[in-house]
Image 1 (spheres, helix red, strand yellow):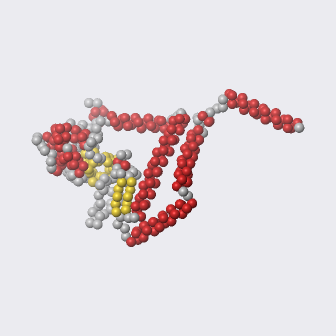
Image 2 (cartoon, rainbow, N blue to C red):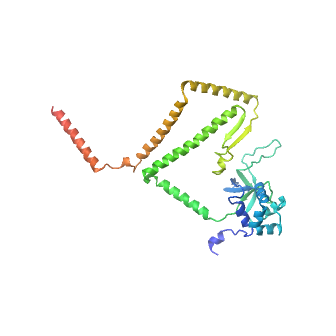
Image 3 (spheres, rainbow, N blue to C red):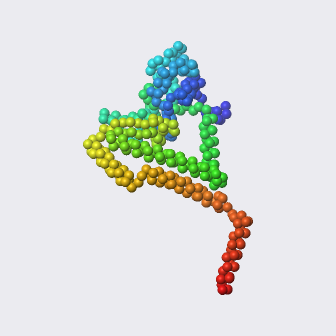
Length: 324
């Protein structure tokens, strides 16, 4: 074998289809976390693995028949937690994953004195007990084909090179990037402002209502950041917080009344539109004056001739004035 082949782990061919199935597009949900003493890792929850196996027994037996036969024997039905645990134990034994526990830096205690566990921990550590449990968390050590990783690496390198070559981009590309950046930031901050305004309105009347509650969660992927669409919880405030809420309501009502007396909705629209246009024009002007742009180019021969003629005419005028 070559050195490259020696460095690559050899996955059990009987159980590798199980990992490919649960980690596929229609598989179970995974998230990233920091493993204590190591780097970022991906993991899945035992309850999600259990649900997937019990909801898709025919699919598992069809695509992973060798694994099912090895773990449960022939004619297995995949209908109990014990069946799921046996398959999970086999995956752990073959180093496709390992069991981990939530390991917070500053653990918070519940009323009973136990450490509170998150639904999706952001920091995990390997546990000595490697028996599969449907309520546990499992760090994925399996690495599939590296083709997609190489493709993504190529995109990153190309993106870095393009960013470094920004000064030599054509002007239309620079302006296009500027417009796209402004549009993206406007949408992003617009959503943040809107969700804060709506949250404040519902907070005053005693509810926590968030639009896109996970939009700023660093542990969520791009699509997960927009799920769920909203979250709704009723607040349980004491008397002091009730007083603060009613005071905030009174202050907000007075502020809106004062603004409405001096400004109309059309004034606000005009202000926002003019400010938006000013920002776009400011960016275009900055790009035009960058080194290497059209406005920084050397003057043409015709421009030099005209400038020389203007200078000569000015000098002749000054001489005539001196003679007079």
